[in-house]
Length: 318
Image: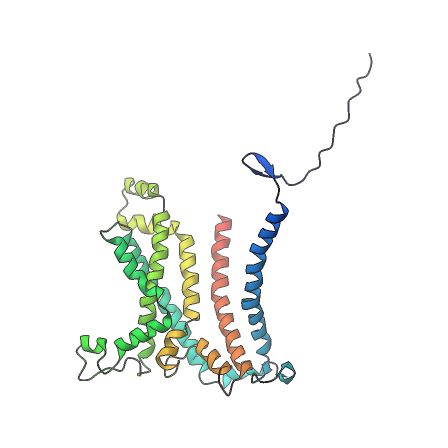
């Protein structure tokens, strides 16, 4: 018997599978690579230029003493003195921190619950629902500065709409000038604007819920409330994450409305206002303003990052 000699097998190099489109392998041409590079590179460069570079610059300048006049050689590096000053000697800092936290808690509760309720009502295909959606979302189109002007007319002590409706024209309440109530009066105006956006987010989430889930819950004998809280609302977890993040950002970046009303003073101090007051003006203190900005950034990241980490880690475990 003769031994059968096997032919050597060809070695096929292993690599990533080719991209296929319509059953055919395709590769990016030179023009496609250029377009893809521009589409990714330009937004990335703009983001770095207008977001991260100023952010890192603020962090660096927070350790300095500089009035904004002259070049970098005029900057005096003083270490953490700006932080020590704002934490111990700056009288407007702690009221501003407290007001920002109140602002955050208020927006997380009132506009979120109101927007969710309105979204549930509009999801039932009411008559003229599109008109209601447009009317409720309209305040979100307005800038916070314009919202401030509108509500300033409502809150005006002499001849204001609110005092007239409540019958307080003889003994008017100064809703904006009274430091004990002006923060909550402005929060109502901010919530009026923010509710429409939350409603739209939740309405989109409700439209995306599979109707079969609701039908299955109804067949099991669940009521409308049980179906919503045990089936519909848990399914909208991604929407809840977006709502929470958007609300935190909206609360911590609040500036326009209080600056229009009374320039963020007399009970309306916010961290964003302190940043502006320290950086802009004749007696500008770039270092102290940058330190306040870093504190505001730290609070923002301290609220958002742990929440997102917890939510996404739970999703990965499941």
